[in-house]
Every structure is written in C-alpha cells, then in structure tokens.
Image (tube, rainbow, N blue to C red):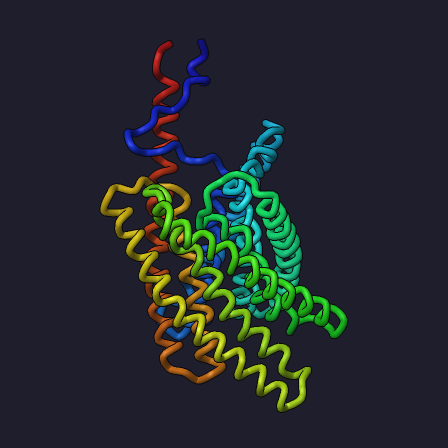
Length: 370
C-alpha cells in the first residue's frame, strides 16, 4: 500500500484545512482593503505608505497563488469545481473570489499611481479588468443564490450566506471610482452597473441577513467553529456607506444644484444611520468572537472574516467624514483601521502556522510504514 495515499493525521479538535479555493479568498480581500486604507487614511503616518505597498504585493501574490492552485486542482479532478458550488455555503464562498478581485483592483488603482506615477494608466486598466471580472462573477452569484433560496433548497440560515450578496455592493463602491477615469459612454455604463449593484445588494442583503440574524438569535447560536462569521454582515453596512458616498460624489455633477444638494444630504443621512446601526452589530460580533476564542475555536480560513468587514466600516466612515466634514466619522474610521491593523497580522500568522503545520503533518504521514 502506498503511503502517499494515507490521509494526514488530524489534531484533536482541529478540522482539516480546506484545500486552496474560494474559502481562502478572504485573505485576499482583507489584505487588499488594508493596503487601500493605509494609503487613503494613514498615508501621512510614518510607515503607512510603505506598508500599503508591501500589502499590495502580498494581495497580488495571494490572488495569483490561490487562483493557480485552485485551477490546478480543477484540472486534476473535474469534480472540484462542481463540488465548490454544491450547497448554499460553498456557493456563497465564491463571493470572496468576486470581492477579492474587486478589492485587489481597487487597491492597485489607489496605491500604484502614488507609488509609481508613470504606471497610473496601467493601474486603472488593471482595475477595470478586475472590476469587470469581479462584477460579472458577483452579479451572477447574487442572482443564482437568490434563485436557489426561492426554490427553498435545504440548509440552515447563516451569516455566511451574506458572502453571496455583498459583492454587488463592492462593485458599486469601486465602480464609482472607476467611472471617474472613463470616457462619457463607458462612464454611463459603469455608473449604471454600480447603481444596480447597490440596489441589488441592499435588497438581497436585507433579506439574507435578516433571516440569518433571526435564526441565530431565535433558533440556534452561531456554531463555535464559525464564530468569526458574525462579522460578515458588517460588510454590507460599511460597504453601502462607502458606495453611497462615492456614487454621490460622481453623480452630483450630472444633476442640478438643488438635486445634487438633496442627493448629498440623503447620502450623508444614510451613512450616519447605517453606522449607528452598525454599533449593535459590532457588539454582537465581538461577543460571539470572544466566546469563540475563550472556548478554543479552531483555526479556519473563516478567521479572515474579522478583516474585510471591519475594513469596509473604516472606508465608509472615512468617505463620510470627508464628504460631510464630521469629525466623529473620522474617529470611527481610525478606530476601525487600527482594529483591522491588529486582526490582519493575527489572521496572517494563524494562517501561516496552520498551513505549515498541515504540511508537516502530511509529510509525517508519508513516513509511516504500511
């Protein structure tokens, strides 16, 4: 019997890590948004710009590496791709692939033009390509997921489902920035897609997260191993605040003075309301996550849920503070960024340790005589 066929030993209480695939793309999302925020919010802080550049390189390395590894798996086993779409939770995880593409593209167009001004046009071209790819995947996923929910496919509601409906909102935020760099015809198309993304994500997100919260509060608590998934709903909160501000800035020039002022007022009011709504959601997520760590929650790629949603709060609050001139929004942005700067290395170190330990266990298993 070949020892290569022996499964790697499992540590007590530690689930086997998933192979490279959609489940790991939270690392791409979290790294990319931290790179963006360090450039936008902390660019004046010593080391902030350098860190944003390093993280941009890391984000691209993760995106390319995970994509290549997953493609290799799919070529080696034709059932891999099909299995990744079987069930609502695995399907929802593809949302991280969409958001990973969008986040890396946005980070590129934010960091690279400052880093290397001569490459500004290239950075925006890369952003455009990733925006089209990520948006196409995100819209298809959101619609497909909604269809499966309407058909009442089995499965207990969970916050992880939200991963399938947040991508169009990321399309809205990143699309607003991209529209400013395109000509009139393409600008109109990009803005139309961005506005549609905002509406679709807000409607589907309200339904999906409403069902998930009801389930976790009334029926069954978040499973210990999935404790960090409690942060996922904050993605729609922060990202919608950012999208509302970004779209308003871009659309205001197309409206009359009165209509533009009214739109700005609505966007600012919406942003303030959503950030207030986020307070109890943050408290709940923090409590659930703290419970998980106290009770020995095992590592999983789901830990990265502590990064991107927090980053969206920082981004949304930053854009709101800039537009409305509200100091309290800037404070929220700073606190969220500092939190993200703490959770990112935690997740990165835990991921590296888990991957190295998993490989060591696999190598050890191959030395066991049969």
